Amino acid sequence: MKKRCLTALLALLLVLLLCACGRSEAEVVTQSATPAPEGTETEAPETQEPFVVGSLDEGETGTEAQPSEETPVPTPALSPVTLRDDDVLTDTELVRVRNYIPDLRIDLKYASTDNYTGNVVYTFDEPYLRYGTVKKLAAAQAQLKERGYELVLWDAFRPTEAQYVLYDAFPNSAYVANPYGGGHSSHTNGGTVDVGLMKDGALVALPSGFDEFSALGDRNYSDVSQEAAANAGLLEDVMVANDFTGYYGEWWHFSDNEGYNYTDVETAVLPEKATNIFAAECNEYINIRRMPNAESEAIGSVPNGEQMTVLGYVSDFLHIRYGEQIGYVNAHYTVAVN
Image 1 (tube, one colour):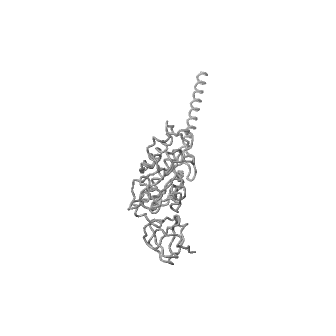
Image 2 (cartoon, rainbow, N blue to C red):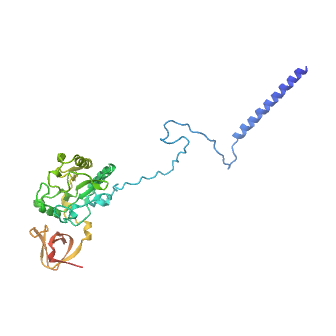
Image 3 (cartoon, helix red, strand yellow):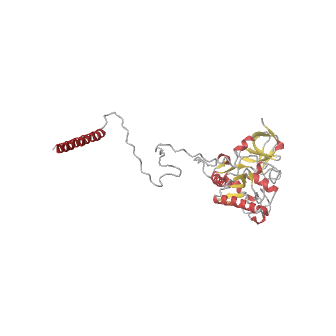
């Protein structure tokens, strides 16, 4: 009897204990579900996003914090050969090349005595081209730089009067365009360039030097070294890919396929000539000639005492503008006006 009573008492105690535990758990659940009073901050429970294979970039780990969607993305730096878009200009505009390709190597041969005439042929020392041609040249320069090379520009826009000087010094139309009788050089269009190839600041091996008036200057590279042929081939491939066509007789000569008309730039006065511009006065009646020599056709005249604007010079002749006329006068019959 005592045993039964003790067993019943133990069972009752066990029931009471279980009931007490159940109430405690319910209170905990009820308290966690109760909304916080207004104005009280609460921390959201931490949750772990599922890891998806292939969702991370190489080198990242699943524990790295991802950037906010509002984090600004840095703008990539522009390449020095990036051509700015100039909405003001049309492709036919004659522009200063360096304004748009500032890293281009420039060595204008006819602005120095380092050419086959041995004389300065034109007095400006900055190259000009059509804006459309400059864009194509910039693209060619960028492609070559990606491969460790770069262009060097030897000639670009060439005034008509300069062509007369070049032809008179070497009157062979196979190599120098004959300007007499209405002819002209494609350089006068402003869409043709003479270029070489450089690497690490020096010219690479090429078939010949500039203005090579022999078979070495043509595009048949069987008579030059393999290295020179490969370099000339690379230059031609890149220029052709950017819408230029090479002249067979000169590996350095490339014309824009656009084919601009030369008449609208034939008498262009380039801003870089401003460093040489000055006023001069005629101290005797003199003829204005088409070319800088006494035998050239007279296209106008300057009376005694009249002033003219000097644009440049070739030998003993001044390149002048008098009114609407542009030509050459003998410098011995002029005096500078201070």
